[in-house]
Image (tube, rainbow over all chains, first blue to last red; front, side, top):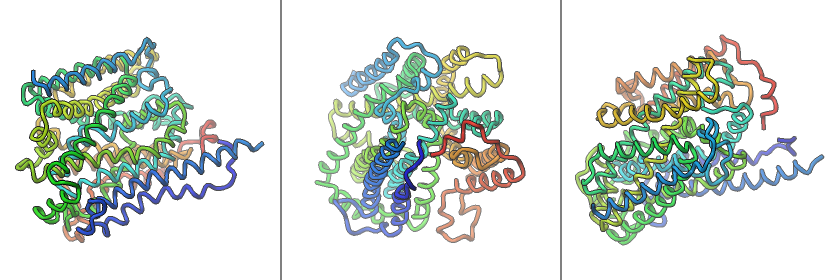
Length: 74
Length: 491
């Protein structure tokens, strides 16, 4: 890869799925309330799996933009 | 022949035919056979990567855990998402380095990074020892699925023999291309079947998801919660972390990254695979639907819950589709495991023993080993019985021990010495073996520790031993020098 146009700090967002999902497990481990018909723990995990795709999509988009900027530099 | 068996056979023949045709007149050197000439695009890499999620373990085991254990099954959804978010950064580096140095196997990666052939032999042996029980598990699953879904008209040994012969045929002929084409059929099939049973069963028996979970909670209070002790919160967190670390350490999965044409493929896959993984949610739903409908499946028999509830709900035709999806979940990982074990034995063991062998010979040896490895797996499957269960449990722990040495070498020059990596892996593996044989857990090792500590996954102990030994030996020995080509690899 060519010289980066500054640090890609947004990449730290990739830690969020693991930390967020697991840190919330003790609090989501309960019987109520159901969310879309799912028990709280399952809903929490499914929510974070979806968030993982969203976060990685955002990082990919930002990375692609940076890569294009880097490619245009002399 | 009943209708279910006819459907299973039809899909079996379709998958094998596609697998054999996948070769399409290519000359098969080792790089073509094992890595598809490093030319796979997004779809094929996606299918190979997704192959790991839908093995017989997740298909039968995912529903079986939901049926037999309840909430602890949810861990299966967690580790994939974490591993995929890491893959965005990890896999492009592995791929780049592998391409630059024309690596074929996972062991090659360690040999090159640490400039150590003994380390390569150790990694190769660990890989094969971990692969064989995993392969046995796929064959066992195949036998169970076919005999259940054919209403007993085909015995398990017959199914295992027929399945293995077909596997050998298409692996020898087409290599990884065969796996990729078969995976395409499998993924469409499993998507349709999982979503269908996961939607139909809860609505048919309970009228909806909320109603289903409420009924389960009434009949079995606490079933949808992680228990206070045993498979508790700390068990789930430690297990998810360990499993996420082991995820890409599986040799067939690691080597599958080499098949990619460019590194952007991994970034796209890291975005899509977490969502795709949610298909497993429907497998859980089917398992939960069975809880109050199919009674009396205890212990390992819980894995039959999906097939049993399908049989009591659907006509044989539909049961055939469920069975066919199950058979495909055995064939695709089975073919990758078979091919990877043979490649490693040829590339990292045979080549070591006969240094004069050229690439043509290695390629022939690799393909010649396929039937031998398959035969060993079949014999173990038919004879092993319960003796292989500890081995199966060990597989994941064994490959996880490769993680510290890998992650310390990913940036360029390794942060550990070759002797350190070797000693660490060896110490970790011996700890895994000892604890598996003695059945040790943290509760037996630390009887007076708080419950939270006792419930931690015992695999952590081996990993800590590994890292400590690696650190101590590395400080006493020299790190590998910087190879000139490595300096441009960062990024």
